[in-house]
Length: 146
Figure 1 (tube, one colour):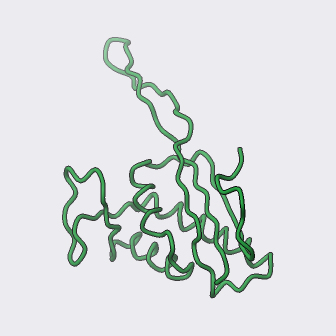
Figure 2: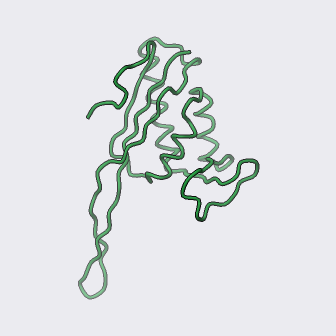
Figure 3: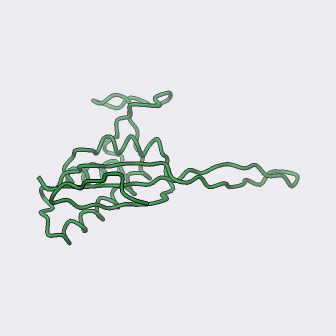
């Protein structure tokens, strides 16, 4: 499996997570919000979302999404934010290894792709079972020094 971005910008670092067990829809919303942010700013915001002090604004699938003060519809996707924070710490370590200035890093590309689907079963009464499908997600992040 290769990275989606073929040409890497100069002075950049990358990281990837494969087959993460989180919601695809929530992951897309978090990635859309974080793209273009400075790395430290993104880390602080994700920590606030995990503590439920700040929300991620949602743009799609707004059927039952409540409005948040000052932003409109939004949610607190804690599980996704924990994995995104881990990914951001990973790419920051990769950037330090390449002697980049971590204070001036900006998220150049943050891509969420749908991974494989895992088939599982729920036991039911009278010896039967019901199948359900669990989707996995792939994350890719590329940061560049400004």
